[in-house]
Image (cartoon, rainbow, N blue to C red; front, side):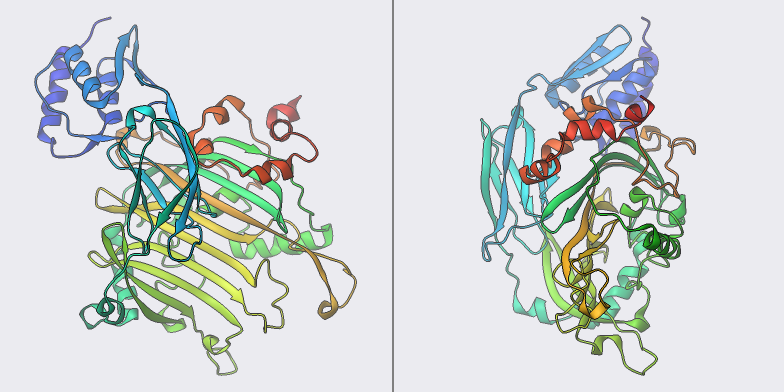
Length: 523
């Protein structure tokens, strides 16, 4: 094998010019591999190449540079034949699981961020505040940090052995009274939203970014799990200046359980299909729906448009809070359109359409949004809601990478793709119907990696991208058990035992995944 030392030194020269730019280990290894016609080989589950580093750009030979990089990154890096092989010298992992609890209220803290800052290992807690991580043992003794909006950071020391069922407390972060009551620079709450909206093009990424994502959809009948769909996705987002229709999604892997939801009758299915065509442009692709990013579509495509429609919204300043070390302003928004009877929507106290926007106090970027559509018990249709008066509830969080904001996660509580209600007396008049069961779904889309460098992106072709109009609930996809056995997000966010017990009442989940795959259909 003939290597290219002169070309390699040119790489060093180029990198020296941009030495102040933070790059990942993967960036340097991939550059070395390409310049020397090698194939970079590693296991994502055991080796983390997303750590950012500032390597010293001495004029080293290839072997010396690899040795130096391996030493500084605690990795084994070897050339063998046509391969550049990266392994973890201490591949053993430590399992840490538990629940993050609000120290004041005793309530679980959902969707809190977990990270090991020196290395980049991280996750988020689930909707019940639970977490499970498999951490490389070389990180023993370092801090594992927990952070959430409005809370002081807390941390634990990574132990030497598995630690299960931990209770980690997080304390609400105090802030002084003036910051709660006084608006910044004399602005009104609406002024803050207008300024945040005006700066979206400055703050959010405008160039194409590729995102690796984990998707999970769980269907429920009352408190019973009746459906599970999980997928590893590749998302290509063209940036804030481009229409959302340009977004491409490619399935890397997917697995689906049986659907034990009680389906709509053919009579009503037609009506719901027509409604979906009106609301979602005709498409029923669950993966495109999951990527429902309100800031990405802030001008035209989010229901009620709280970032732009100032005529039909009220805004109220609710104070200053902290996200890690970042101060944010919390603004309540509520739908307040003028109805034909001359009354404003907010006068009707039996409903609430609104949520919160969390705005960075420094650059006015949007860190987080939540949304709730709820009926109070006194509303005449309150009983015909999915759960506790809720029709729809969502939370969207953003992360800042190299000065620009990108999606972090989206969680949603929403109607299922089947009957919402099963009645004891389905033929009775509407006012006399008695609900026996409720069905709904919870979805979670977590961005696990963001690639901004053009040369590092994996192009999604028009042939490989998902069809926007594909009915993904009914489509079968290939199933790869080996992938799911080693997929780190499943280890970090395992299904609760009750979900497995509920879904396996008839047959094992493994058999269900196989039966709902293309290989089973073909056989």
